[in-house]
Length: 228
Image (cartoon, rainbow, N blue to C red; front, top):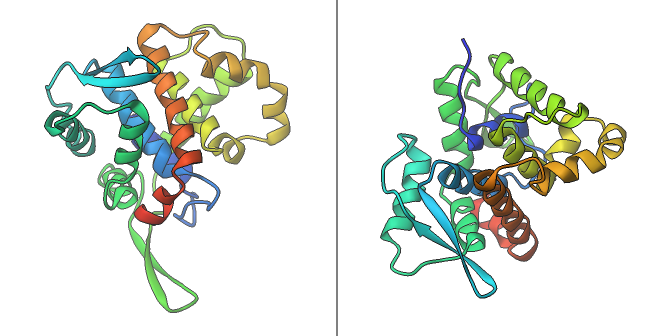
């Protein structure tokens, strides 16, 4: 069975170690997921970006739900906010959603892609882990990334372009692929993340991913607040 995953679920699937069910410390998955949710809202026409002087402000233009609990919760936050905010602000807020990691991972458990388990840290502290149960969805996902990066095809799915931007911004690509091979395809990756192969909506979503990078640099407390 082939699953149509949301961007934030794809990020979690790539970020988790297959056997251990844990995330590498060097991966800023919170910002990646925050950026993924924002990108989904952009690409589905729920929100639009307005350039206001030097700031890119977000407007809700369609209040219809997407029937994903996490995305709909984030859209509701936008709808109920009394003041408009920038892309960077919303990425930060979405990245700080309580129990983000576990909520996304448990959704993948419900799809029988991951399984929920427990282990102990230093034989004392219990923690939830999410080892991979069905490797097929992640394998297909990596094949899509591989085809986009390591060939010169001009036909790339918009979601795949955004995912590459996210994965590059948060060092996920270095975990998935060999660093030397990535270096050899640096120009190709830059073309993708600069939106040179994308339409307008996808280009806006990719720009939102660059906002995620800014959040990761200027708001390091996100990791401390959200925890693992």
